Amino acid sequence: MPRTTELRCLCVASATVVSIGAALATLGAAGAEKTDGTRLFDADCAACHASDGRGRSSAEVGFDLPLPNFTDCRFATPEPDKDWSAIIHRGGPQRGFDRIMPAFEKALTDEEIDALIDHLRKFCTNPRWPRGDLNIPRAMFTEKAFPEDEAVVTTTIVTDGPNSYESEFTWEQRIGVLSQIEVSLPIERADLGDPTGWKTGAGDLAVAFKHVLHHDLERGSILAVGAEVALPTGDETKGFGTGTTVLEAQVMYDKLLPHDSFVEVQGLARFPHDSGLEDEAEIRLAVGRTWTQDGGFGRAWTPMLEVLGNRQLAGGAETEWDVVPEFQVSLSARQHIMAAAGWRIPMTQRDSRVNEFVFYLLWDWFDGRIREGW
Image 1: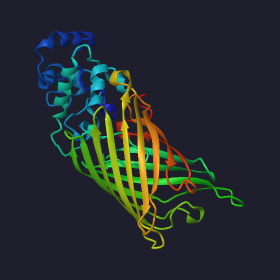
Image 2: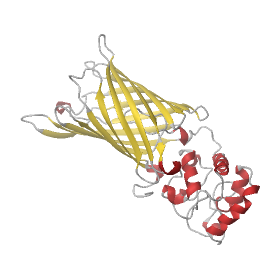
Image 3: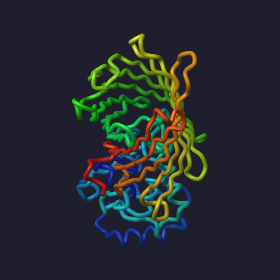
Image 4: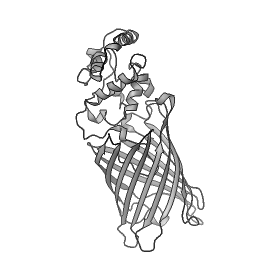
């Protein structure tokens, strides 16, 4: 799916003052002569987007809407083919963009549109950029390998025992081709009992770095490693932090499966600076499948199931296992605003551990502003 307001037009049929209807009629008449993506693009799209994919100027096309530069890999790679296909089939409004991008589903066959997308992908000539088809839905706890530009607010509510809830604010920003930085800060509120009562405070500030080691679109896999440092900024006396610096090492692997299914795995180890706290290892696994409404072009629904295992790296320690049934749904037409909800259920040590309701709101800020694309 194109990003920012400059990306509102993928394949405008004509840069002349002829009507959109006349342009589509011309496309239909020429359909029998189109045999590949290059010819399709040159015949039907280059009038606006130029043969080199850089986009023509406003003076050339006759309207003020900026056209995308398909040679810019930063723009051209993050979204999957299905989002571009939705816009070419149904026009700009299908993904919350301008109506000047017309619908081509009556002028081009599905095979021709697929060939056109294949040609558009060739304008980015740097294969080091991971393709957006490898960017699977975000699970509640399992970190995915794809580098992102997102802002997420995740809220956890304890549903048994002492009342408390936590909202963690996370900012993710892509750096270069393969890397990402992340900053997160939890804000917690808990009932500390008599005579203290309810208290609110910030938890430990965490800064993380992620780097993609390998990606293979043909095999549908992507592998990344990461590191995180959590600083003791929270009030430990109120339970709003660990009271020590914690280092964390991570490895993340995602795999696409048939029928829009996927699996993602994350392994991590934590090392508190305070020798009084135990080192920990954790394994997280998520599986899910995406269903898309409106013939594959509308709102996306993704049910997922996570399995979480945590164990202190000390002799005799038991592994704590949780399961998290959850789902994610796209809210905006542009699909850059998402929501998800899940239920974290302990499977071991259930007498001392509690259920938690977890939900998040996600804004893919590189796709546009919050109020755009609805």
